[in-house]
Image 1 (cartoon, rainbow, N blue to C red):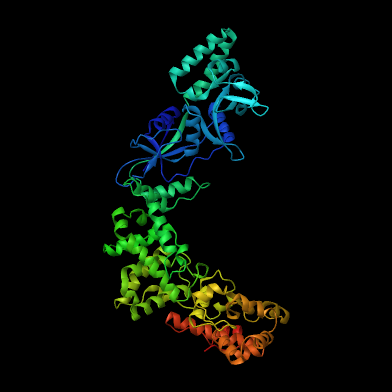
Image 2 (image 1 turned 180 degrees about the vertical axis):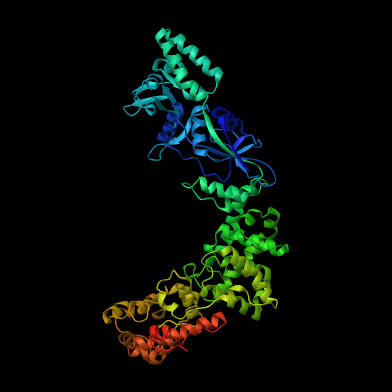
Length: 591
C-alpha cells in the first residue's frame, strides 16, 4: 500500500508548478509566517533534513478527492497524479520562495499579512561564523527595504544591478538552470573581479549545488489505499492541525462530481435549526451526525447490512445522498418534535445529542407511522431506556446499528431491541446525579416537566412558551444556603432529588430560607394555600414534608416519585428498591 524513496526536491517542485502534484481540497490553508519560512530555507541551504513528506497516488476506484493547486500556482484543471497528505506547509514555503516568480504571501509573527521575496546574502552564506538563518534575507514585494516611514531606501534589489551591488542572490531562480547561469554570468561581468568570481564559485559549490541536489524522503500511498486509511493517516500526521472528519473527506469525494456538500449541508442545517416545533434542538446536530444517519438510511432502503464505521460513511454514494437527503432532513425535524413532546425543550437539556442519529433514521423510515399510538409508545420506551440506561456515552457506532435494526424489528412484532432489554436504573444512581452534565439528570427534569409541573407562583404549566418566557432553570427545593446551615449531607441536598425546574422570578422569592418560610411568604403576597399546594405537588413533592421542613421525609418520598417516573418511561420496573443500599441512602425502602 505504501513505498518510500528519496526524491529530488526540484522534481517535486516541478510537479507542483505544472499541477500534477496538488493538495486534496480538505487540506487546511497555508499558515507559515516569514520567520518560519526563513528557518526552513536555512535548513535546506545547509543540507539539513526537514522531514519526510507523504503523497497519495491519485485515481483508482476510491481516491478521487477534489483537489486544488498550491499557492501561487494557476489552476488549469489538470488531473493530478499525486495529492500531498503531509508536507503542505513545507512544500508551499519552498515552492513559493524558491520556484515561483510571484512574491510569497505570508505573515509576520504578529499575524499581519505581508508579501516577500527571499534572497541569500552571499557573504554571510560563506562566513563560517555566521548563522545561516541570518543569510536568508526577506525583502518586501517591491524588493526595497526602507526606513524613516518609507522615506529612505536602505536596500534596493528591484533591479539586477541592485542585486549585484548588494551581493544578494534571488532564491526563486535556483532551480531554473538558464536563469541561474545568466545571473551568475552577469554577476561576474558586473564586478569583473577575480576574488568575487572565486567567491561565486565557492557559493555555487557549497550552497547552490546542494540546494539543486537536495532530496526529500517521500512516503507514497498507492491509489488502492482505502479512504478510511487516508483519513487515519492524515489525522496521524497532522496532530497539530485541524482534525479531519469524514465530512471533509466525503465533501472532497462528492466535489469530483461538482456537488458542493458543504453548501448543501449549510442549507439543511439552517432549515433544521428554524423548523417550527423543533425549538432549535437540532442546532446540536453536526454534519458528521447527518452523514452517519444518511449511511444507515441508505443501507436500510437498499436492504444492505447495517454498519456505520468510518469506512462505511466514506463509502456513501452521491446518488444515495441525493435520493434520501430531503427525507432525512424531515426525519430529523420529526425527531426533534418527538423530543419536544417528551418535554425536552432546549438544546442544553438534551440528554444525548448522539441519540439523534438513530432516532432521525427511525423517524424517516417510519414516516407517518411514527405517530401511531403503539409505535410512538415503543419509540418513547426505547428513547428513555437509552437515556436512563446511559447507553449513548461511548461506542455509539454499534449502538446505532443495533437500535435502528432492533427498533424497526420490535415495531414489526419482533423482540425488544438491545437497548430496551439491557437497560436498567440503579436507585442509588439518583445520589450521583449532581450536575446537569449527565444524561440521566437531564432526563429526570424532562420527566418532571412532562408530568405537568407548574410554576409555584403563577400556576402556569411549564410548556415551551412558559419555559422560555419565565426563564425556567433547575434549582434547589430545599435551598442550598439553608441546607448548608443545617449541615445536611451535600450528596443528598445537591442531587437531582432536591432539584426541580423553577422560574427565575419564583427562585428569587425562595431565597435561602427554610421551605416553610418561603412558602408562607409566597402565600402572603401571591397565591392561595390550596393553589400553592397544587403547584408544588405537580413537581412530585410531598407538600406536608416541605411545609414542616422535614428534609429526610421529603427526600425519600420524592426519590420514590422520581423512580416511579423513570420506571414508567422505561416501561419496566426498577429493581432493588428495598435493598440495604437503598435504605441506607434514602432512610427507608422505596418500594
